[in-house]
Amino acid sequence: MNDMMAQSKRIAEKINKQLPLSTLNKIQSTVANINMPQVQVETAIEICNERCQEISDAFESLHGVFSVISDISEQIQEMNRPIIFDIHNSLKCMKLQNLEIFEYSRKAVDRYLFFEIADEIGLPIYLECDTILQDKLIEMYRENNNSCNVKEMRCVVMSYYNKDYIESICNGFTNLYIFGEERIKLLVDSINVLHLGYYGVVNSSFVNQMSGMIRDIHKELSVIHKYSKAEKNEIKTLFDLKCRDDSEKVMLLEILCEQNKGFLLWYRVAKFFLKYSYSSGEKYMDQHPKRHMICHGIQTNYDTREMSIELVICIDILVELAYRIQKMREENKQMVIDC
Image 1 (cartoon, rainbow, N blue to C red):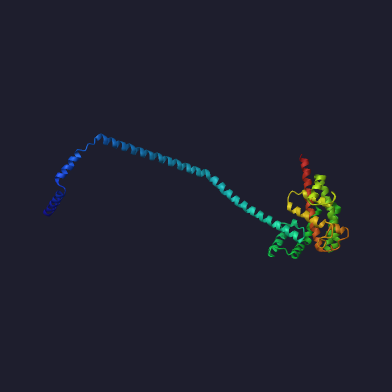
Image 2: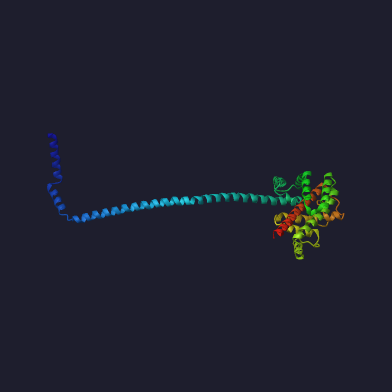
């Protein structure tokens, strides 16, 4: 205890030495003389309290605003959800449409290439687009460094037009009233002789019947649309023809002009018929049966299956045109009835 008292005394002496009592008295006197009215302090405290309350109220208001904004945000999100789904579905549809466009473009390119191959190998197989024959010939073309091996490709076409396929073409024209019973019988008999291998006899019959088929189709077309002199002249000018208006070449072109779909296909058909089947002169006779030259006894090398198949393909084209014109006639009749 005595030790603690002695230690406290020593600490007090050191404080007194560092901070004398006189100095403390001066500090006390100075503080007492500070002039700060009580009213000012109280007013300042009240103002601070008011500002603090205003800040508190502002925060409460902001909390309410944030709550409303949150609700609105949720409502907008709910409102936009169908829109988002629609956008998603639209993008999905666009993707599918792009794929469809790509697929359509690919098919268009393949068809054009197929038509080019048909022209190069000299066979009017244009109706066979989008078939296994098209796929096979395009495959052969690409495997041969994008060029045609004409001989091999023609062999593939000859194999494609086998007996069963030729019979299916025969069945096609037997169901068309445009040609009449007598012509149909002549065509059926010619097909039967073809299967026996008498190609010369068959080809003589085919080139004559093709001319009759064109006239039959044109007669049916004239009921719907009879071409004027001016229209015929326009057609002849377009294809650089110098022939009578009632020639089979002009009749065929009138029929082709009525086709509202497949312009490239029918244009190539027109070019093939005019260049090979219905042209005069000895040019191309080594490979193609020419109606004018056969009927006049000038061409005599047509006793081959290849020429028979070429004429069968031409007949198939005329059958397709007859079907289209017959359908147009029937639709025209229905329109008249409806009126």
